[in-house]
Amino acid sequence: MTTESALSLDPVWERLGRGRVIDLAQPMHQGMPQSANHPPFRMVVERRHGDMVRPDGGSAANELIVTGGHVGTHVDALGHVSQDGRVHGGMAAEAIQSNRGLAQLGIDAFEPFVGRGVLLDVARLHGIPVLPAGYEITPEDLEAAAALAKVELRPTDAVLVGTGWSRLWPDHERFIGRAGGVPGPGEAAARWLVDRGVRVVGGETIAFERLAPGAGHATLPVHRVLLVESGVNIIETMRLHELLDTQVAEFLFVLAPLSIVGATGSPVRPLAVIGE
Image 1 (cartoon, helix red, strand yellow):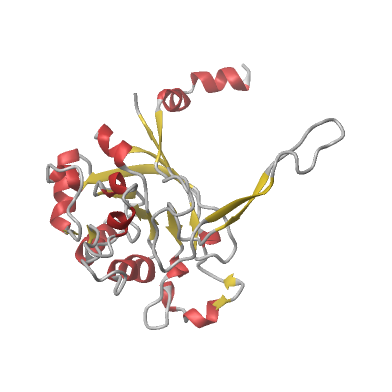
Image 2: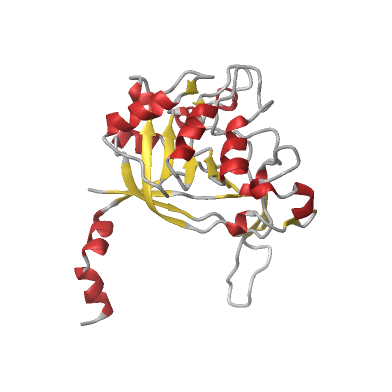
């Protein structure tokens, strides 16, 4: 039997082949919504077709890209945040950082994730497409969203929290939430997720956690709980509304950030594979 015919008979491959792939990344473009704390995304076509033409008439174009690691849909490395001078594991932040990056806890230490993803749709729980700006998601919200979806969290799951906020992507100021804030888990909800042994969490806003109206990034307790205290990576600025509209709560989740040595985060293009 050939390898090709063997794969065609494998039930796992058959199921995946029939699955629908949903792209969970926002498109990256100059001027897209992002946190003001990070360098913006820029792209310029450095060489255009016709700038150099080969003897056979062929030509090529290429671009120069400049971006922060926490722009667009991205993953936070564990070394992205410190508390009182210390990062995850109790190490002194100054001992692992230099202008060349992080010697430990950089995004290159993140092992690609291919496994069970779970979506907890808190907006649907409340019967609305988008949660109100500044809404704090509680443990009770997450419990009820899991019950509504009839799913139970398992250790090492990737858990995505649906707020509907990715529907607002075209509205730059509202998406950033400088004035009105953004919805997201509060500290108690973060500890609820940690207690269930999740491997990675993700959401639709630039901060994953709730930002109070007018407060911006003044304090980020959920980042402290997840990254520093618990070693749980965070995916931010996800495009979840297409997945939310399917009302599918359990799926194959694929997550592989760029392996940039020493970086505190990386752009990523997460994928959800759902059944027919």
